Length: 159
Image (spheres, rainbow, N blue to C red):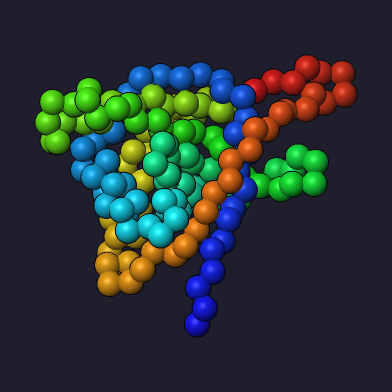
């Protein structure tokens, strides 16, 4: 069977808020192991318990609602809701320490989603590692485009 690369489109809306946080070390290590095995430098992680998809690349992990789809012009794709942007490794004194990161929210009222993501994403990573233990990861790519929210008639655009 021929292998092929699937590239998904994701839209990055304007940032609503950002907060400092830290990723558990074991979660960060699982992300790095999967990235090292990826032929494209991009890994898609289905988070079935939340109906979300985590998209890992070298710079960040973005999370999208797998059921939500948006269009901008002629292009369709999923909207990024949350992004984890790890800071440089120099900020850690030990590999067992949590990894400092910025959590970027692209919608309001996602604090509960963020809390769930930490646990559910970790479980989804372990499941993916187990499923792909003796197999190659799929060749997947992500293209992230800016997304401009349009104002509804008579109302200003809101994030």
